[in-house]
Amino acid sequence: MQFNRRFFLHKGALALAGTTAIPNFLVRTVMAQTATAPKKRLVVVFQRGAADGLNIVVPYRERNYYAMRPSIAVPQDKVIDLDGTFGLHPSMNTFKPLYDQGHLAIVHAVGSPDMSRSHFDAQDFMESGTPGVKNTDDGWLNRALQAEDLNRRCAGTCEHTAFRALALSADVPRTLAGKVPAIALNNVNNFSVAGQKPSPAASAFEAMYGSSGDQILHATGEETFDAVKMLRAANPGSYKPSADYPNTEFGNSMKQIAQLLKANLGVEAAFTDINGWDTHQNQGSVNGQLSDRLREFSNSIAAFWKDMGDQAENVTVVTMSEFGRTAKENGTGGTDHGHANVMFVLGADVKGGKVHGKWPGLEPEQLNEGRDLALTTDYRQVLGEVVTSKLGASNMDLVFPGARLQPNGFLKLV
Image (cartoon, rainbow, N blue to C red):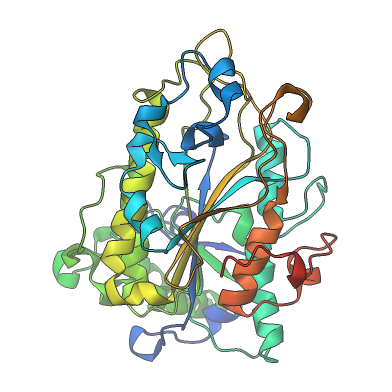
């Protein structure tokens, strides 16, 4: 097998973003023994495909919910009641204890104020944090990390490890693109196996750069490989989680995020996504396509929370999707692209056990354009409150330019 620099940077588990030159973290040694665990860590989960918020957190007291969804509505006696007005889809039973314990907060009728029904545009706008603006180059979470450094008065001089910002994905997502270097990992096992023996790919990588006569290339490779050594030190092949994760791509991503957070690698922000929410056909009600995805989604996050153990005290998880689905089912037993949606915020000090936000109602005159759940909370209010509280990123003009967010407009989730 032929190896080259591009292969390792893009296919071999280290995809670099936010750079036009050699990033700072590649010109200094970052070893596991010198890493310090951040006090607060943020995990962002993106539900790609536009999840159906109305069947995720069901407004089961709304008559029109059942009138508009004769075949896919969740029956009242199957809903997991939350507060007498809303209930979880029955496939999300693992979320109920988190809600009852006050760790899980729900925001309904939330989303992007942009009216696009295009997956590509809506995801791009949400990840950039600038709805309706197509020329934004970086992502809201990267800017939040920049704002954190500014708040600490150490912008450009702060010491961070290579793993400060990471994504469990093939490439660095738009959310994490920007000035702060970020890495993408397809799988933490890519460069090591049980017993900390290097894989053939890792050995070839080390040999290639060790023999390079180009000093810049050699330094880049050497320091990059130090980051790989940090993964080896975590010994992913021997990791024994404290919870049972679904054996799925998303379940494995959440397990690996837990592993990396617990390995003292200096992770502050982690991102992953879960696909399969575009339910135009055969969406199902209590069972079916959406039910299966919700079970995987909630079970993976609940397992992650349990797996983190005492360290969960310093972790916050926030979920989002580009837009919701139409309030009325279509002719093929599914739903089409809609508007407002639902977000979850999970954390030890989250003001959970409550469905936050203003509920707009589902009567015909209350719907957006006569077809969708209306938006009452801008998703940036939720994210802005979370990064202010958890990362100390209080400069909202930097994190969400043009949003004009003010703390008095936050929902007091954290």
